[in-house]
Length: 85
Image (cartoon, rainbow, N blue to C red; front, side, top):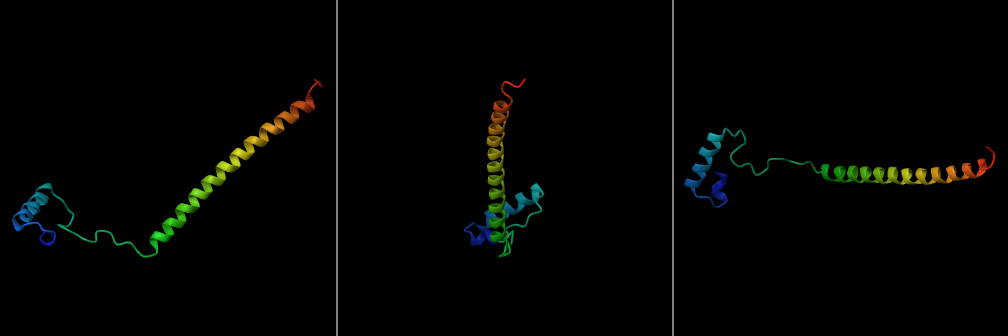
């Protein structure tokens, strides 16, 4: 049993097994490698996260730039039309 390797006594291990059975757990008793991650996954996730962050930053920068240009254009149009109406 894996619990014995962790320093759990056999009686405690048996109690844990009966508790798992009573709860209807479908998980294995002690699986040291529950999820095996391929070697290429962490770099891919890091690169994908960086791309998302850069895209959001670029979108915010474009929004701020457009908003600033809109205000400048509006003021220029108001000055151009001032006194014509």
